[in-house]
Amino acid sequence: MTGNLHLGLDVGTTAVKAAVYDSHGAIRALEDRESNPVAERSGWSSQPMEAVWQTAADAIKSVSTQVGAQNIGTVGVCAQGDGLWLLDEQGRPVRDAILWNDQRAVDYVTGWIEDGTADRLARFSRTAIWPGTSGAAYRWLKDHEPENAARARHAINCKDWINLRLTGQLTTDYTDATIPFLDLESGRYAPEAFAMLGVEELQDKLVDPLRATGLNGAVDEAASGATGLPVGTPVAAGCIDVAAMISGMGLAETGDICLILGTTAVVAVIVEPEAFSGPQPGATLAHPYADKWIRVLAPLSGASALDWFTSLDSVNYGGADAAEVIQRLNSAAASVPAGANGVVFVPFLSGERAPVVAPHATASFHGITSATTQADLARAVMEGAAMSLRQCFQATGAATPGQIFMTGGGARNALWCDIIASVMNTTIVASDSSDHGVWGAAMIGACAGGMMDIARPPVRDEALRRHRPDGKMVASYNQLFQLYENHVASSPALWNARRDILGGPS
Image (tube, rainbow, N blue to C red; front, side, top):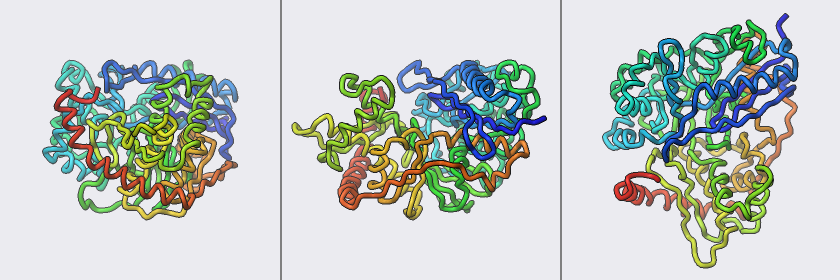
């Protein structure tokens, strides 16, 4: 008999989370394992595909053992999006996966922006291309590793790789398929888009997409041995992690907005499908189950900006665990008034893709004087990441709502939520839970298995915090935001000069 529990898997860039839920969304088991990317060179980011699968399989086995594998009735997977995950004719990895945050194709993207190709490409997927997209990464591969490009039979995404190992069936879904080649209006790949990037042969390597709630297949014998899941357990097509988080928060109405504070940050707004009216910043995804689109602006530095800053000083910001590190950072930042005594931080530590695509962008502090303290810098880093979110949100053109939902690991940082609420001048509704992506994946799996109506998801028993804007801080942050925008606007000439002199980010 089919079990009545639902397993969700979220395969992120730095961690893999597996969880088992009951039909009300209560967690019965949870496992979190590290899965770190590899940087062969500065700016490069990759992961061994077999290692990613093994980490995922181990996490699944842990939670399935905790609840009794026979009680798991469905599986849903979400994962990091974009990048380039290549398979050969036998379905084996061609090479390590090139990830979404990889910068090796930066010169291609710079050229496409300068000659207008990027704007013409946006006609189809409504997305501003960046180096970590499959098209850019494959173009680099074609020119620099032609033997690997020739061996590639399938180009897929991270969650498709996990699903293939679970079921032996190769599928993808619309959320992962959108960027950068899908024509959102027709729902089909646009041949013109491949031609624009000089990768016409890549079209034959892509898989036609399904709805996220469609069925990928069922757990096969090999996967059962690796994970403990019963043979025949249904597995959903699944979706990109951003879409799963939105599903896990129950957001499907036009105008719903959420912020995701993970390794990167995400501003996501649900919109109605619309005719093309010109290039827009950020990306657009098909909603995983509603007939709507998701406008996504995802700056490359989210909580990673805080991690970077604290890593510079293990004496003042070291700790036994991440919670202690953040507590020390918060203590320093809280001792400084809003505005960090005039210090502004532009958090473009890995280039930038939203609200503008600027592969050669670098981070910077502005306004430092002899009176500036380390605490000022700590506050400025937290505020700079929040300013980036505000700039991205304003670029969507959406009206500021009365409240914005927030998830991701950074949403557990109450001080940061307070800062963001005042920077955005709206109430931030946050939760100490950071499992919305895993829950969203589990919901999609339950829907694919015929055990849940995802359009009417269960209401979870979840404690929510409301962080309201502080009037005095709002006034200070409005002034600071003007400075932030001016610094960002005046920086491209310096970024380009740095590129020309030094040959790119180091």
